[in-house]
Image (cartoon, rainbow, N blue to C red; front, side, top):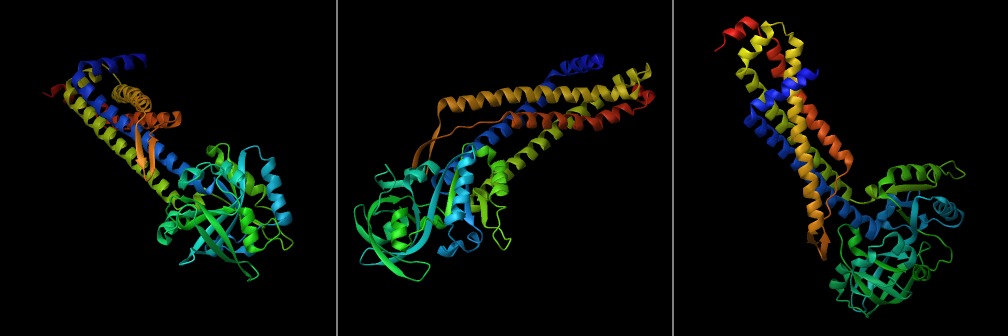
Length: 414
């Protein structure tokens, strides 16, 4: 086997120009894929962070049936009493959970004393909320960010603030109906303006949870949802499975589930965009496979035709077809290894250079976001194995053709 590798290496050196050209094509393919994966992954992780850290959290717990009627913000499906206690006890015992925030979600009428419109409200405990979604404060484009919210204050979504011409310090009135049909109104002072986001969250304002209980005239500790922040989002799937087993399996007296748990993927339409990014990455990988396949196969076919006399000679002196086949396959293998190695080195150096140069960009009103491309060892190993594997497969057909040549016919070839 060593002799075959030695002979294959010599053959590659004999045709240095062709070897370098093929290796360059493989290298360019590897660099293109690894850089795309690292940059696309950076954008994807940044956007996931924007969604989870400024609004949703990594997971949410609701009473069973709440999500199906979420658009109407039903107050009769709030968790309260022993139900809420069971959930919080489980969350407190889970070492993988960094923080959680209890929220009351309600719909109300928003009035500036001249005009009225509808608004969705998230009533929160400021301390819990900032620990669970730490980027929420960055969405405040006007007003104080420290402490998020105090009793008697409201954060108004930008969409409503512009439409109703509401400014910081203005007094407004919220009118809401509780689950018993009782209507109540309560004045608030505008503390800040929230940056608009896509989806229904574009009309979501924020008030203190105690103000929500006062507005709705409720005395219990019921909440609509519990948003959860994990210590490591990479373990979300396993943590979700654990919570689903411990909380989602709880049943009432009628033997029906009491709670439902969802990850951000189920709660946000951005998950579809994340899937599109993954699909684009897969498409780029397929393009890499095509480039490598065509490059290697072309080189190996040319090698067979240029070395027909040589093949006939080694076959005539007793070299078995399997060794001739192995020789060409090993050449393809070495080409793949060389091109992949150089491509990986260039990619890692380029990624390090981009991180060192601190490339920044703007996204909406967020300025100076840093591009921080990273790539995991798994991706590097996977791409390398794919390229080398395709290099071997691409050399099989030319190698098989060389191995099946008739020695006499090959020796007569001019």
